[in-house]
Image 1 (tube, rainbow, N blue to C red):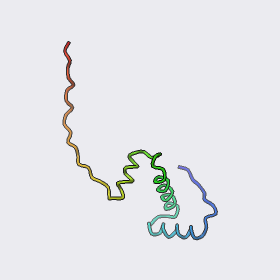
Image 2 (cartoon, rainbow, N blue to C red):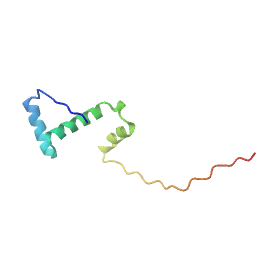
Image 3 (cartoon, rainbow, N blue to C red):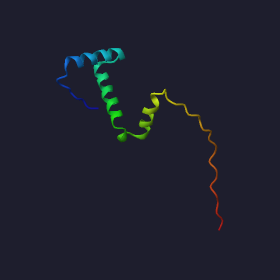
Length: 82
């Protein structure tokens, strides 16, 4: 992972970030990281893996449970006689 330094953040933004982090029980750094990840992930769904794009759409509805598909043994391939 890499690090970035963000300069010249106004006091109101910093205060709001601190309050939001406290409500979530996170550090300011973790809260800022999650805000960046969530914003960038939702901003460009075309560049996202299709599984992640589906997961993002379904998560807001509480997810989905799919039934288990029973599997049987693999059938023998056909034999072609000459």
